[in-house]
Length: 143
Figure 1 (tube, rainbow, N blue to C red):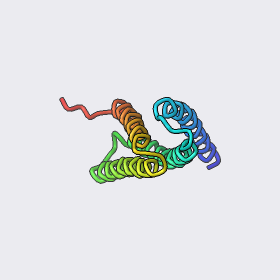
Figure 2: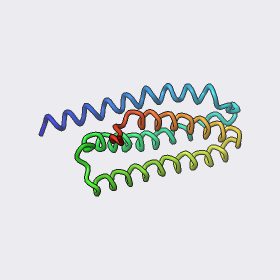
Figure 3: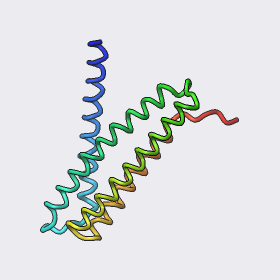
Figure 4: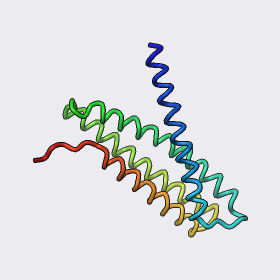
């Protein structure tokens, strides 16, 4: 029991570290590509940090679903495949809704241009992540 607890703790710490490094790189990309008026910078970055906290929580759920998918790929039943796919769809919807909700908050706190830049970059990054994940997932042999 202690071994599995330690392993789970190590994996959780590793995920937190990866998310932290990715978050710093991502924040630098946002800073380079979102033009925020200095008078609105504090409001923007406070909202962005809140967004990142929520996004990271969803990211952990995504990782858990991917681990479940990979662990069960060769032994999925119709029921487990349906549940897993339904969970993945719901998580993607939550992620998209999160971005839209922060677009609206950022638009109100700053202006529509800043909000649009945020939305575009987040969409670009999310699309890249989704594409990378899909490229790595096993596909059934359809020949």
